Picture 1 (cartoon, rainbow, N blue to C red):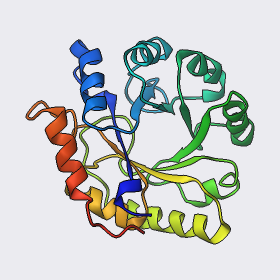
Picture 2 (cartoon, rainbow, N blue to C red; picture 1 turned 120 degrees about the horizontal axis):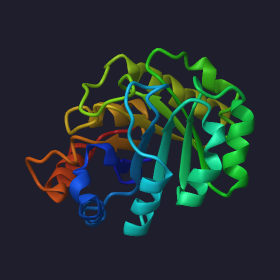
Picture 3 (cartoon, helix red, strand yellow; picture 1 turned 60 degrees about the vertical axis):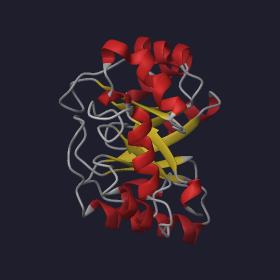
Picture 4 (cartoon, rainbow, N blue to C red; picture 1 turned 180 degrees about the horizontal axis):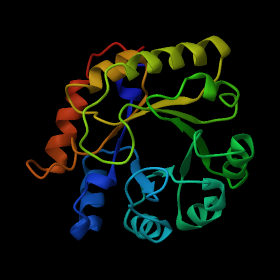
Length: 227
């Protein structure tokens, strides 16, 4: 793996929702690989964001793969809705999903990529029994719920341990990191083994164009030796 294989998924949560279609188009033109959509219900995390209707609207505005992160209680109840809305990846939280194995297979049987996420304080062991099934393993590098937080540095050790575990067992899952990713922290995340970087405020930051922000982020990982 080298830096060119690292995918960048701008987080729509940080975009200007008043011109969401434009922002999504700008991200695509700037070379985004995926669009990351944070779905929050005000129960599992202390915020409410978007549901299937917004996902459907973004799907209509962009051909980029939609990386949909369900930060909601009992996500298995809504998988079919997000499949219908046009998601390409559905990422479930191990902490909120009572029957995780079943829910992963709900996603895969619908023809989508399935992911599992864990919060900063959740042990890596909670992923071990399902790693053979998932396409994406997401390590939360901030406590979920709000954009613009600083990355918790200690979470990178978990990223490294996850990468080693996948390599030891021969599992092909991508390692995604989410929270506080910017040109300063992205190189460390890649060195730790991340292959998908979710970046919100670092891309949609109001102080520079999306194109300029994406270029800065890409440049920050050029030549970085990945884990």
